[in-house]
Image 1 (cartoon, rainbow, N blue to C red):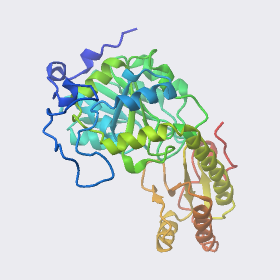
Image 2 (cartoon, rainbow, N blue to C red):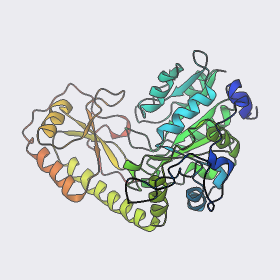
Image 3 (cartoon, rainbow, N blue to C red):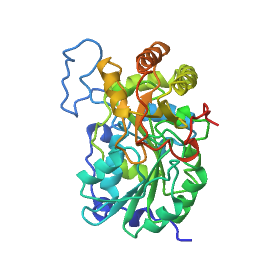
Image 4 (tube, helix red, strand yellow):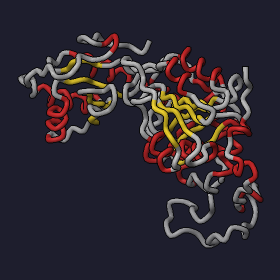
Length: 377
């Protein structure tokens, strides 16, 4: 089997580029008279904190606390401005514009394609199967020598399900000339181990996670990227020098001391998800509720457009995914609080007399008929 070689994957000029050296790169101490970064020595115009000094460019305090929680080494962690920053950096580090390509499996998270388009990188699209799993034979056949990145979203957005572990492992072992990125934004809601446990076994593996979902910190824009120390060093080399603000770092550190509270929130969300799914299942115009390992449900309606518009009129906001591949007639519904979910259901129940359409297929895969409540297992 061909062995993975990171240097052969990177764009040649990335190997020789000299990164920006910030004042905090050159002196990493926390004590002293700081006259090296052209900061305001007097203070800030707000009194909520000492914001006149630049933040730690490498967020070491967060990484030291996060590493044991995730079962990785601090040097295997990159923190970005949301997960979107490492997504973009991975494209820029590896893909030569107009020459290389990435492989995605729609329906999936849209930023993989957006980042590739911004960087003038070709996109190979191999759709998931009708039950939202990897078409492994088609994926392996589509990989070319210039395929630099293979994106796998698990649990998948917008379908909500985990991708089969055997399929991911097969791709990791076969695609030694590519980075295989497993985006685990919703992993806290799934009853399965993270792929971070496999980082030392697969040098071409990258895992993305986020503070936006289970940790409840979407407004902070803080994403996690886990990979080999060599690849993390490359991402640190090409990122903006101070990409994570001091307030974000402080709040993330505080959040990491409340892991038990995060788990309590996850438990509540999963309980609400089960109740919401059971109630949605009782509505006559709901065709299918797809299995979810995330904090949302992909629900197929007889009249998705009319349902969406009715909800909007009542100021209940869901996501219309009905034009996304394999998601005909589907709305994506985030799990809210009990009161929010009850409001959603109350509005939907006013549509009990809605006409039944036969224009749309009845679900996909094993969930083609009126589904039973599906658990995480």
